[in-house]
Amino acid sequence: MSYEQITSVYSVSSNSFRNEFANLADLEEFQRSHEELLFGMSRSCWMHYVIDEILKLQSFPALMFLGLSASKGDQRIPYSEDGTTEGHYLVTFLSRERLVQVREQLSALIALARTDVSGIARPMNEEGLGGWSEDNVRSAALEDIVSNHPHKDPRVHWGEDGDTPWYLFTYLRTLQKLCLDAQANDSALVYVEMDGM
Image 1 (cartoon, rainbow, N blue to C red):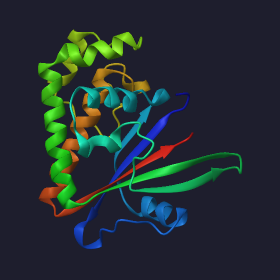
Image 2 (tube, rainbow, N blue to C red):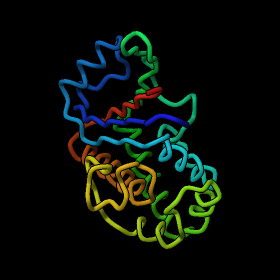
Image 3 (cartoon, rainbow, N blue to C red):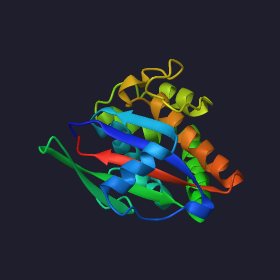
Image 4 (cartoon, rainbow, N blue to C red):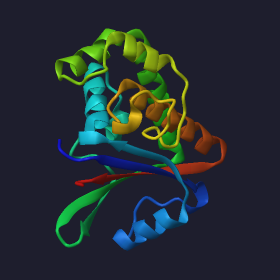
């Protein structure tokens, strides 16, 4: 894990929702024409690693797209920068039906963090990831911060690297709120992860 993982979430009305982009140009046009509702940046993919560790504690299949799984994403779109650095955009399409599952499982994951604090803190401490004490996990899980850019938000303790419990739970709560908002507005979400920077 040696690069930053960048994620973006966009909303799209249900009547214009589609579950595939024709190519990279089509995806880039979509990104230019839709407001980015959540931007995430995690140094060395730590947020995604932490989510994988949490998914080992309890099954949340609707949230697999948030982890490090090589098979995640509904569509993989290759890109090349300057002809040298290659990677993929991993696109997950969250239809209205899928949003319900994602929202419910995000609620359950956050509730788990509030009750099984040691279960979540232990693997992170064993991995040497600083800041993951039981007190910090409890504090982060209990806060109610929602932010479109958690790595820049001064309310998110040590959020700039995307590897603390405050960053993780702010990101998850924000995604949870976006799911609720999309359901209320008859919309769907498109989750785009830039893999390979």
